Length: 119
Length: 192
Image (cartoon, rainbow over all chains, first blue to last red; front, side, top):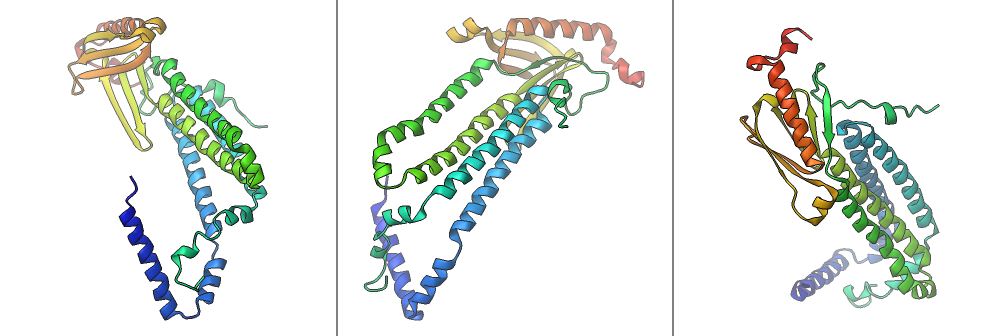
């Protein structure tokens, strides 16, 4: 269940935050450029990459170390090969994505949080 | 050249296996238990293609087809992981019957594992429970061993051929009693 009261409070807090930033940093453009240049996407992708391969390692490790007989080793190999193929497929698909198209979908939805004239 | 012989010639060994000990039976849950989970996962595999069938025209008009397929590729990575997590838990839930003891190894998740063992001499009573239509048809069920040890109840869950395994455990128990008078481990006294 969505708690609308909390959401309204959050929106008000965010708006207050932006106003505060505007007061202590009148030059909001410098913050904007800082935020624009910060590699959020790269960090996020790096984290996803890390989590994905750590999880893959955990399954391969458990199957090869604790598995008894040839079946767990065979499944570990199938899983590892499949993980590699799917990961390359995901990377290939990501390279074909035009981020501008996705960004255009959310255009105008952020400005509601900002004080008048500060976007 | 890549040597893959370990996939065929891998030994039925486990941590703590004694050199004089022989594995008589290695038991997993019945394949049907895993098959049900795999069928559920296959349904989740079809899901994104159904979504594409419904929203495909909208996605192409909005120029989001490539983004959609990227999301599907990421979804497939998660799907593959989920599928093999189930397979891993299935393969690591094992019951090992050796000519000296019974080992119950249960994997409850990564880094959460219980391992208990029962000496064959401590077996007091064995019972089999096959309940339901599918278990009766496919011949799988639970086998419960009452023991005189610290772990007073050993439960083999959803194992195939439970009646045959019950007979096998009783046979091994009788053999062990006959070979080990007064529960003295003859192999260890021989220095093997």
